[in-house]
Image 1: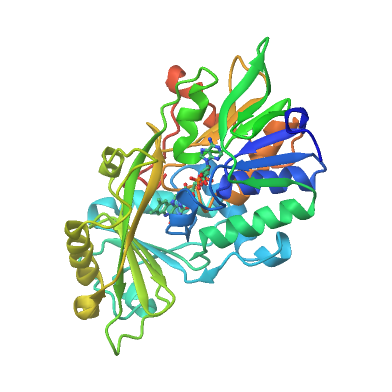
Image 2: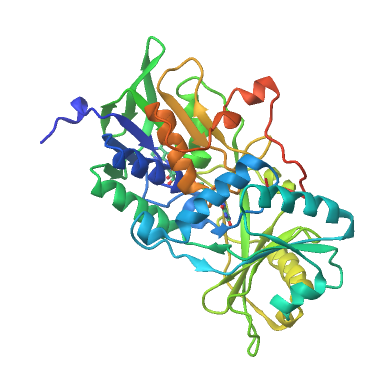
Length: 396
Ligand SMILES: Cc1cc2nc3c(=O)[nH]c(=O)nc-3n(C[C@H](O)[C@H](O)[C@H](O)COP(=O)(O)OP(=O)(O)OC[C@H]3O[C@@H](n4cnc5c(N)ncnc54)[C@H](O)[C@@H]3O)c2cc1C
């Protein structure tokens, strides 16, 4: 049996969510030795509690391109990665009031420029797609026919399985305690099961990323906050399954269908970042007041839902940065240390492309056409935050 204290690999990836497993898969298929450490089980963090929405409606070019590149993987996951990610095709509608119509048009133009299939609709055209929607207050809508959703735990497991097929070692129940370094470069990771040596370490620990980076001397502005999802069961007679996902920027919330005649609802308000949470101790259930608010919003947008039954929702963690965009980059001053967290409520859909981008950073090879440079940690000190051309809320 190998002596644990002697274990050496090319890259250690910390975190078994979508970011870590996709990165491990990309590295392993390129021929690198990878060890992934997950302190609990695959999908135990935000990924296992995600809303799973996969849309391309973004308001800056780089995130729109990332979402589109990832979509190609999600909708053809078995062919491109292998296994089941739980993909369900629904389409998506992004609805704004009259004051935001110009901004919506600008975003649609941006998205079309990068190759996203999206079109501008008026209220009547929305009803042609979803006759059970109330459109009285709509200025305009963007319709994205290719959107859908997938399952976080299934996707992380599939990526990890494929990484294993290419030789990666996936160690669940093993926590990274500290990043080890010498003379300005990473030497490995101190785990609760011995030391592992590697010249490159990827911190993909999601809401725990900031506390892990601290062990290497970095204070990153990415903080966990609690995000809730309400679940409603459709009343008998409502033929709305699976209805399109809705980003309702008039009421500041979103809806998506779920199998079993269910609809999920969550908030789109930036104030979500104020619900600061300790990632090891937070309330994983939904507040009564939240269920009431989401039920009112849902009924206003989908009136037949007035007779819906409230199901059992859940809460998970966003990891939010000051500009609501992730930190993806090699950390300055410590060669071989790469961070990839702070996805601020958008990280699931980006998983496939982020794995490629992080593998590029880890290896120095450039296989992904999208350069992660805008997401470097240094942007916060430089004041070069990532901002959208036009933003209705926290959509990125
Ligand atoms: C309720 C909710 C709804 C969401 N809805 C959407 C959505 O619709 N669409 C979308 O794109 N995104 C959505 N998101 C965001 C998305 O789920 C996250 O951005 C994404 O899952 C983050 O994945 P990750 O792999 O970076 O982090 P995580 O999934 O949190 O993975 C980090 C992992 O690291 C492990 N870990 C932590 N510390 C250590 C350590 N020291 N040693 C070893 N392992 C460690 C944890 O156990 C965890 O499994 C939602 C999030 C929530 C909470």
